[in-house]
Length: 254
Image (cartoon, rainbow, N blue to C red; front, side, top):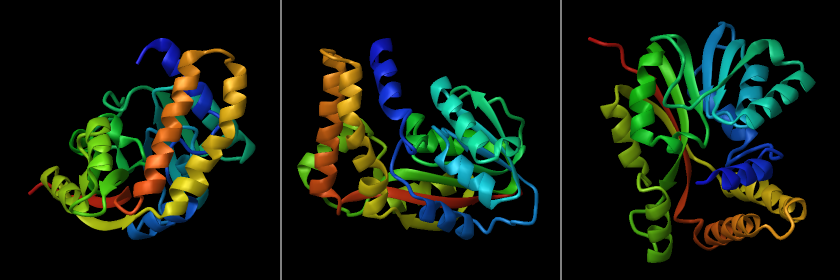
């Protein structure tokens, strides 16, 4: 991806509440399944936080000190502005860095959270490399693109296998977590509204203004075309894939 394309993608997505499928109800459900103690002062890392949908909800729902990480300073700035507006800034520290170079200490966190972002370094790589930052018994909560069926049409199978070769069924993902030092304690599938109502439809409403900000820009037009193609694929094949929310506890060393 060249610099202009990245700049355009940031310009499109920074105005979004979410940079991928998700929902407040689903974040709340994950909090419950993780059995997080709401009376304890928890130390949480939100990795790949984007503009802060999950960060702000965690800060509101929990007694927590949160370190929010994203590689894009524009997203971090948007998170700071939203945190200020909601009176949550004192509970959140931000870090602009990549998720494969986290500036944290071993066993620093009670919880590592990452919604719709671990794919950037791969599910197995993220689960394995982040393990050391969790305290023994700490919890990993991540959402990850997941096949919902053992078989699917070649069109969607080829698309996602090209875009993200690590896409797999939930049973495969749970096995990866076990291999990386976790005991899975919860899993559920994000419903359609997390894709269409919370992510794709708001994104589509951005397209006219986005193109107006970049008149005649072929890369901008191509980005919109690619996004529309992905949305059409989801609408056609949504029963075959979604994001799965995975909750797992770090196994204490024997």
